[in-house]
Length: 459
Ligand code: GAL
Image (tube, rainbow, N blue to C red; front, side):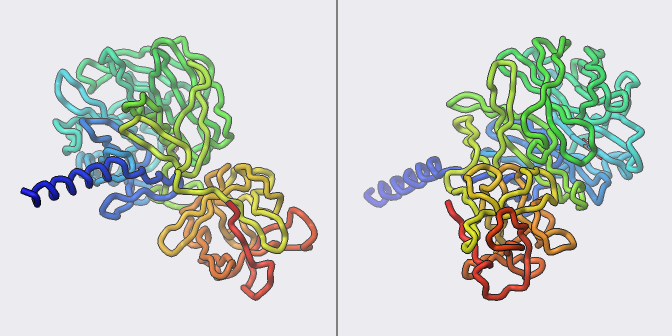
């Protein structure tokens, strides 16, 4: 009996420990991995919640071409389990050589089917401008290709789906060479177009993500600059048919180096948070689409009809509570200070761009100088808070810049006796130029023994 009691007690303790374990961070700008260690390939993602699980689906490519829509699931939005490639290049002859982008899944209660829509191209160019529709009896089952078409003959490029409280579902897609955003109501079974509801004309926006909060519809979009990040905006309306306000910009000029793909309401005991899901597209830094990473941030609402997107290199999500916090309690942001110069690494001109130079400047603890030191295996990465980008050696010079954290070893460092060694060149981080001057460029040089090579993380 005694043993049984102890056993149960230990079990109960383990359960409590599990429930109270602080959630780990979600690292923006680094690949997400599954619980078994594979890289999550879910770009241009959507999410559908079924039971306790959030199912994440997105683009998984072979080079630039379509390979699969891959699906993962998680209860905490952090630990992902691969489920299946739910639609693949073998699902239909027309998908063999194709592009399938921004897939989204919604559930139709009447037919008890999950319905997938995505943007479909021929794999050569972006002229087909179609949608593809596929259905499945289970959320993570094999989706059966139904058809592909232009909605009511309109071009359809970047797109999303939205299901309203009354069960009406909508396709929102970029039309007229991305100048218009068309909103269509879907048929009762969600597999076809019932009607064109409205055209949001002439703003040249794409990457739509739509959500509803306290009766207001919010449409978040990007500008149309291909893979390169630009400034996201939002529009609001009291009804899907409009009128929609003109776009208002969110404050970050490059949307924390991301492009919107989805807004996920996360509801728990403390209410609902609205999680922005964005893509940091790797082709913008000369890499392949599957090298792209994710930028997930909590939207904030200064008023009932406005939205903001504060940045951070990490977030903490508590799905049980329905809360999303910037940063992570286990991470202390620090300045990277030169031991000899009383100056700190700071991105020149407060640039948010890839390959922007880094200088030694004042040590104010503002996002331009604050970094998160992120350990990835033996590598250290230093993620600037104002851009989300990593301290790196430039592509072909010894200058030091900020760029996408995934560009390879030139964005990785190791620390030995206070020296910061670049993993690509093996050279040490120093400040160039006159030691008395402010604003010297950060560069790398052959490691010697100078004081100039020593760096301190000041938190
Ligand atoms: C962007 C679009 C992405 C992808 C890319 C290709 O405009 O939002 O989903 O299609 O172009 O260049």
